[in-house]
Image (cartoon, rainbow, N blue to C red; front, side, top):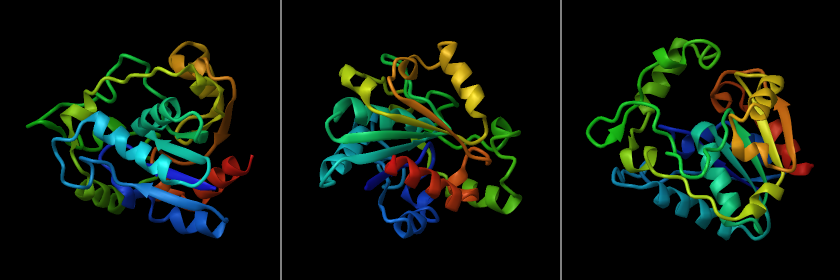
Length: 227
């Protein structure tokens, strides 16, 4: 199966470099995406630009695809399911939950000069970054691409209720499946609360398993594609 890989904030397609060969070895066709404004130098990119890039990748695959969204990009994966319910066979959300209709995509940190730069490690101390050593942190911070303001503050628009029939796999790295299910039941993810088929998979890692547990993450995604 074609597996489209969308990394979260500050990351380009190279974030999946260690996952891609593992997925190929498991018989799949991984497609890591570099989004407009996050790796191509287009600081004026918008959320719509990023969604168009994801949809172009969905449209390019010959058959149905598994669309994987990491962290904030879980929303982009879900937007793809909304826009292409006939092409997206399954959605996998790694360490994130889709933003609800009418809400800002990822307005989490300060905007400086029209972009949202990586805020440093203080906001992520604890389970998020516990498995990243100093070398890995330095490498991440030096490669981090500031997110355009029009992406971070872009408004999410969802329209096609067929998205709720698409199977969802919630990959739980820095939190447990029980925690994720509790949050969804409590209304913290209105979109997933309405999804008909939600599966939870535990992954013992921090928030960036593509960097710290690439083989294990690839196996989880491959199994999701097979089911």
